Every structure is written in structure tokens, then in C-alpha cells.
Length: 339
Image 1: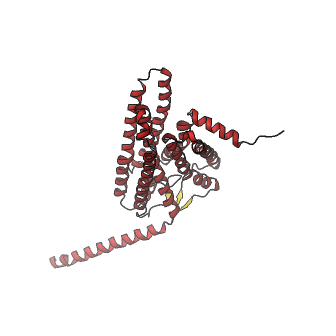
Image 2: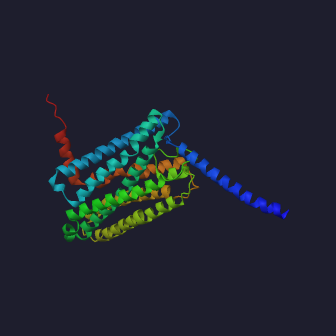
Image 3: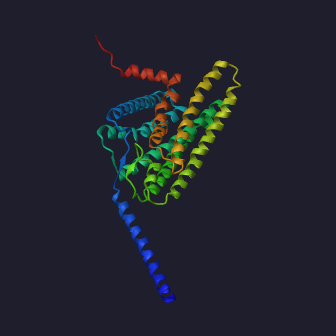
């Protein structure tokens, strides 16, 4: 009896190993079947989809027009060739790319009843979106530093915020974001997708794809956490400290109107940055078990669509110089009717 049990034990190990190998090849076979993804619509009913798509398209067009006017104003007017307007122009260019990554494709898909996005298209969208998010955070941080130097150290402003420094910070932000976006995109598409190809979002983003993977996503989530701490956390802390120094300096202004003007400019900046980072942090860093599709889609609007829409209004169109230059551009470009 002992000999029989002794002989059975190796056979059980071999059988168990074959089952594991078979399961592994089944997973590979299933994962290779996912050649495209299906995106989530804004809503199930056609009427609501049409309404939301038209609303987002109007926001998109307003964002493109506003940022384009800022680019023209800061490029054509020689008086606006300063570090502050240099960063505003870069932010406007970025915001045009940022909102173009998600909104047009989502609206067209929703209106044409087409939910399919290819694997390469999804990878491109994730890379471009993550790249734009990283550059946006870094640009907002540099702009907060620019405001800090202009208000707290005005005499040293030409030395600290030189053109060379501005170009170097822009290139560092772009190149650093390229590296981070490439790392996250490559790590995401090294996973196996063998459960479902329905992305619970109106565009491809990393948290939604991690939910669809049958691989171990611990390293991916750890990389997201480290990125959030190193880039988003440190940038947000730097912005908050910069504005604390700005507020403490502004409170010393003798004229009450100047204090009110400074506060009315700085507070919306902090509000947009806080909304941008908090909504993105919740969607990207929440535990895997928490899943509310509608909630995630609403929150994604606050970090994917709202910031590019509000940035021209908050950072530029409240500025008298920008408004004056835009008014001149509009008067020159609008044809006069000869009656």
C-alpha cells in the first residue's frame, strides 16, 4: 500500500504541472484574442448621447479658439515676449493637444455608434494622454514659480526667469514627460488582456485597462503610485508653498485694490490645480475593488476636459494686456462690410 502511494505521488505532481501549463496556454490564447477594445458611451439613450456630445464639442471648440487666440496674442505682440507669456503660450499649445486626445474621438464614436478602438490606437491615446498630463502638471508648477519670483522677488525676476531658464524648464518638462509616459504605456501593454475588451471609460486610460488584465498588476499600480508621489505630489507641494509666500507678500501691499486683484488671480489658479490633481489621483490611485463607471467618467471630465477649458479664462483672459491684444487681433481679422 505504501508503494502504491509512493508511486501515485509523482504522477499527481506531473498531472498538476500539466494542468498549470495548460491553464497558462489557455490564458495566452485568450489574451491574444483581444485585438481591439470597446469604449464606453456617455449614455445608453441616443438623445442623451447627442446632448452630451454636442456639449463636449462646444467646450472643445471654445477651448481651441481661446487657446489659439492666446497663442496669436503672445506671438504677434512684442510686449508679451516675457517669461510669463512664454509659459502661457506653451500652456495653450499643450491644452489644445491635451483636449484633442480624448474629446473628438469620444464624440465621434458616440454619435456614429462606434465603440471600437484598436490596440495601437488605445496605446497611442494612453501615451499622449499621460504625456499631456505630466507636462500640464510641470508647466503649472513652473508658472507658480514664475508668479512667486515676480511678486516676492521682483528685482531679481530678469535674472532668475531668464529666457534661457524658461527654455530649459520647458525642454526638461517635455523630455521628462516623454520618459514617464513611455514607461507607463509599455508597462501597461506588457500585460495580458483575457477577461473582457470593454473599457469602462469613454477613452483609453491606464486604470481602466488594469481592470481588464488577467496578469498581476501590482508593479503597474506601484509605478502609478510612485509617479503620483514624485511628480504630482512634489509639484502640488511646491505650488502650495509658492502661493503661501505669494499670499504673505500680497497681504503686505498697502493698497487694498492691489491685494484684491492678486487674490482674485491666485485663488482660481489653486482651485483648478486642486481639482485637476485630486480628481486624477482618485481615479488613478483608488483600490482595484472600487468600481463605479459613471463616477469615473464624471471625474475624468474634471482632469481631462475642464482644465484645458478653464486655463485660458483663468490665466489669460483676466489679464488686461492679453485682452487688449486679442481685441486688436479680432478687429484686424474681422472683414469690414462696405455698404
